[in-house]
Length: 590
Image 1 (cartoon, rainbow, N blue to C red):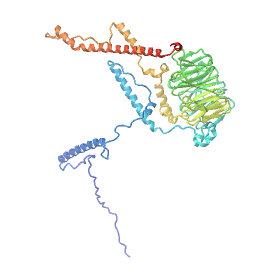
Image 2: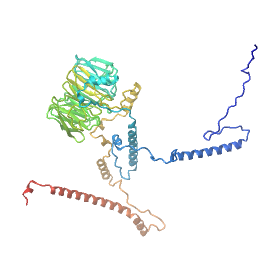
Image 3: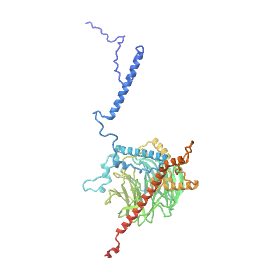
Image 4: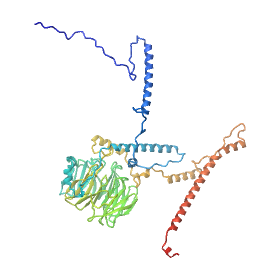
């Protein structure tokens, strides 16, 4: 059988016709052969391009005005923002604008207000995008949450959260002071008998562990996770995260308690010799040394809102200090006995104190008045406030956590836990539902649902930042360092104009010059030629502008009259209020 030969391939390739797409108005006109009527095609392309642009403009304008359904937008403009959400991010009130002749200052104030309003609205809008919510521990019906043990909580939560509850048995060198880093990743432990250790408490990776062969009073992280300060028996020492001694500061002796101000790069120390000292960590210089004259200083706390230091004393008073004054800003009598511990919330509104009189008191710092008072059978030796407003109080070997202390009267604790030894240090971990407890038998990490802030600011304290991000953050923080001279009770005073000082300077300038440079100059008619500056013409020109000066005089007289009437009304209202009061002798009147 003969097979037929088939030729599928050929040495000559066939030309495949490619179908060109039709020309659209948004595409550029394709270049044609110049030999075919070049001028005609150029004019047609220009006309086509013009038509396309007109069509596009019409489409854009119609798209703005109408939807696809050919109906107008029922909700024009941006979506409204709720007032409560705006109030949450509000930082300051509007500044009163200066008079008309301060034009540049007026423009600067308006621009700054516009920028702050834009930042406020953006923060309120992006609040919806925050991924995490804060939750609290809720029991079954007729179940008290303070009876739920830590083991039950660790079993109920996921594996990652359950691993955050652990105990470190360190019986040889206790009791221990505790301090978490600003990001909440690193933990620093300082034993009374010289044991010092820092590690990543989530991964349990040890960074360094040494024994300083000297008693330790307090430990504190500095601006980064690679440096920490230790108050030893005689002097103040600074170590790095590898346990290498960096500095021995002999000016700071007999230090008992420490607080670090992160935005000012200041380390505040309270000593047994009644001295409050400030060390600038960025330059290594002593900023201020204040003799408080109140005896041994072993109770110390800082207000995170305004960087004011709170000191508790043995006579029951709490004093507020800044590095700018040698005297206390405020003195408050809080307890009948000595003050044992002080804590301030992160917004700087409330202060909680515990004393030897076995009372736990809550104060409003803004009004400097007590709000509530609670009686604890054994008193509280250590206090700590979380980012969400939970209060932890240690009485002996029992740690109790309270919820909503300043808003509603509390009758029972939110959570309770018994540790192995007497508590010596207590602190909540930032951005975590964890409470670190340092006691005589070591360290305990407790699970406290609802304690930490669920959403962190990645530009300020990022728990997941890399080494490069940490370096960049450190440089920016040093550039934005706040000077210690700006520490005051009310930080909003910095944005206000000191009108009294301005008026003083203005009066001094008037006295030195002999005239008011800001006063309005009196109208002097310009000399004109050709007989136009005759006496009658000059008087006529003066009469034309006379009403301007009269208007200012009338306005001032009206303002004075209104002020006088207001003062008179106040006096009459006072008299009427006094006349309405009944005295004890009124009952004898007929």
